[in-house]
Image (cartoon, rainbow, N blue to C red):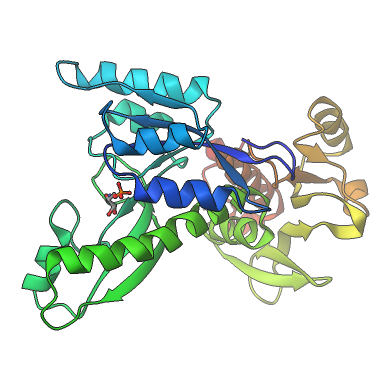
Amino acid sequence: MPDHATATAKVAVFVSGTGTNMAALLYASRLPGSPYEIALVAANDPAAPALALARAEGVPTFALAHAGMAREDHDAAMERAARDAGAQYIVLAGYMRILTPGFVGRWEGRMLNIHPSLLPAYPGLDTHARAIAAGDSYGGTSVHLVTEELDAGEILGQIAIAIQPGDTPAALAARVRLAEHQLYPRVLADFVSRWNDPQHLLARVRTLALALPRTHERESHGAPGFRVGTEKSGKFFAHFSDRHHGAPHVSLLVKCAGLDELETLVEAQPHAYHKPAYYGASGWIGVILNRADLDWDDVAHWLRRSWQQVAPKSIAGLLDTADAS
Ligand code: GRF
């Protein structure tokens, strides 16, 4: 993952056929300011036209026919090629293979797919014919995260495409393809930039903080904060800080055990923790959120710990102490 704001994210694109989406992704990546670059185009069919296009454009390629290979072995070879190319994300663009759960698990949250329907409608094949036969007014395209269940991961972006009277699956597919070429580069660019996007980071923090018992959100000195207890007498257990007082970080301020723990963590892991202005002196540690290798389980853990420390005795039992320690 990019470890500073100017690095571009490296992406491996997996294809099986024509690769018009791969081409759209590639050409968009060559516009100034693209946050991603295509580090590899890999195919399960050595004759895929997408490979020739990538080669002509100077993009490294990898091809391995899957026939006669165990699914695990083929996946492993594709994955190795992606890792060797330094890929931080895998993008499926017309890759007509079901991936093994192990592979999907290792790339969870870092593998995207494009599907020619408005998911959750019409997962699987023949989407255009099915939408036309059902009399739908719209078909569409969706970019989603890849999970074990086919075409079912979080939807990252969609475009609806009107179905015209007399439309054929082929005619609709051609318009869907045009929309896909707009959608995929935009969604991918946004996705690889998420780690440094304060709005995205705040949304995730909010979800985790408000999932804890008896919590609510309250602004504090113009910044979002989260309290435990009643609206009237609750206490803050977390503050969201977006580059405050000239700090380069977007961070989450939570209560730690005290200044000793704070100083130790900041010294040992300066990329992950900082001592916030003002708050630091009273035992609030800054957990740096805008770093590409952030582990959200750690953030959840800090929130629970801080909640536990601040919650009034009467409700502290609502969170399992063992969980929060
Ligand atoms: C696209 O329609 C995509 O939605 C589906 O496969 C097709 C790939 O087309 N997953 P191309 O190879 O990118 O032209």
